[in-house]
Image 1 (cartoon, rainbow, N blue to C red):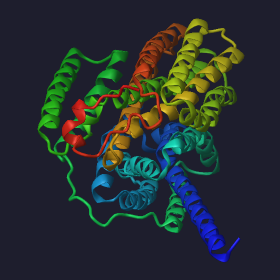
Image 2: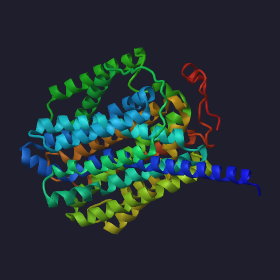
Image 3: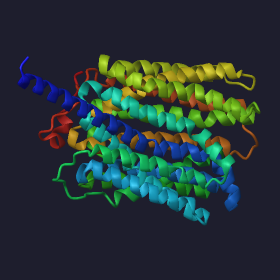
Image 4: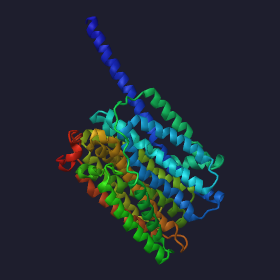
Length: 488
């Protein structure tokens, strides 16, 4: 073999090696940045009683520390993705990480409860720029036949973060104050920024001017606050005037929001994407499945404590049965969707998820054994692990490349909407004035979750089947998106 062909072969191998190394760094950086939001959501849960005691606030007030974070995340996710599309995804990703670090340190030093809520809400807003832009960069960089696997890896990282959050929070609480939970973000953010600096992700120079719906965003936030208030009001104890005012506020804000989104040149979310059948189905699945997951994750500990009077060790083992399987199977579910298409793993996972919820509903009572619940939650985790990667990939894959950030942000927004509704359902139980809840009340919760899981499974046949089949062309797609259909 002559020297020239050898040199060309070595050059190709070197290029492939560098590309592989860069993509590995990208996955690590985006996964490390992506775990911040779920980790800060579940890690704080164990610290709520300590925070309530420190600031001497009631149960209703401390509940808004959770709800405000979820609402801010839901509103800001599509905005963060849109900013990345307009100003550069790598740039917005870095800014989001740096601002998240600064606000985490400020939150750790919050002098009052009002300041804590304000700073934590701001933390959610800037953190919302990280996840959609990370997902969009993965979509831009991944080969079509590896997109599902890559999405599964990042999804698994976020699931693992959500699962270990309570354990990490408990460890930090035992070592000191709840304020250390926010300081914990510093090494994670620094690590993500360092990986991203090594990566040197290419950023096109030409970008659009910033367009954000500054009117629609606060209206959307107010609308979600109204939804949260009404969900929490299900527990009773609210006077008729407050309930009537909340209902009227919901209707008025809903009408204003719809009108604003129709007239805005840059709406809060890229609603036109929902004209694509596969994107709409995959995103609806994410919303409903996350509602099931989040409500289960929050309900099971209270069932074990309030009804069965069991300790934290049992709770950790049972939730681990769901979370570990869900996180462990997420990369496999994504890889499977690369091999057989997006629809089949989503359908299979949705059916298994429904079976898990149905098993819990059929067996939950005051004397149900932890082993039975662990088996049911394991089935639930398997279903979610198989389906989440496929559904998320299908949604991102269905969107045009230049709208990848907005598509990922809107999809992630729906995930948080599911969490908000789930937290509201749980609030109706935990805030009851009639004493500790009994098994029948949890049976009602899981009956609702079974209906949500059935609806989620019903959306999966509408997800496109073939890898890449849902991807729209880039010529005039914003004007003709309503004419695009997936035959898959």
